[in-house]
View 1 (cartoon, rainbow, N blue to C red):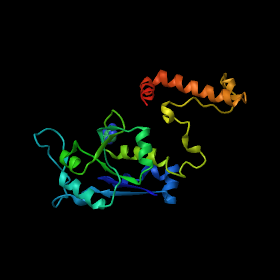
View 2: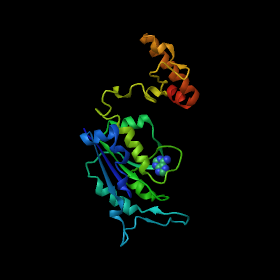
View 3: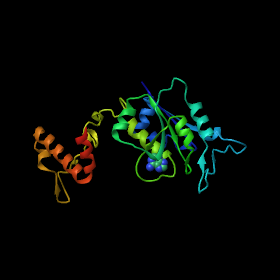
Length: 231
Ligand code: ADE
């Protein structure tokens, strides 16, 4: 099964952008996943292909029109398209590694990138868009958020990570932040590597890494430990 990403945006030239490089880029070239960025403005209204209008009730900024966005969505999907329909938005459900993993075992996603002050609420409801946030800060549009989501998903697709043992011990796997890493030189600026890592005792190394991961998580992200207890 190939992962198909369809992006609806006013800035299709922002894709694949950084995803043309590194692991994701090579996987894209191989056809391990596909990316289609579609221009919402093609469905704009009038001579100027307007995609937005002033907010009902007044106020600053502009709102993306429901009819325009719906036409763009309907043109991008078929009746048999079961992919999740996402809309990048700071109001959305927080993006987590669990959600990323769910997406990576699916057949792709349709991703609407909002711009302006928002998107008419009626099209979010009528097309069952799930709003997704990449964090508690406001970007100027959903494009960078969509690129972030795709990067996180694509690296989990079969074959993409190559020999990097598909990230079994990376941050958030097992609900913990990652343990510290070291490499040569053994001594650098008067700092040495924790002796257990060069002891050759694999049991001790595994225990040390798990303890360090728990310690760092407790210190930096106690909220993750609470999530873990609830599982
Ligand atoms: N669009 C603007 N800010 C965003 C955020 N934090 N997450 C997702 N989409 C956004």
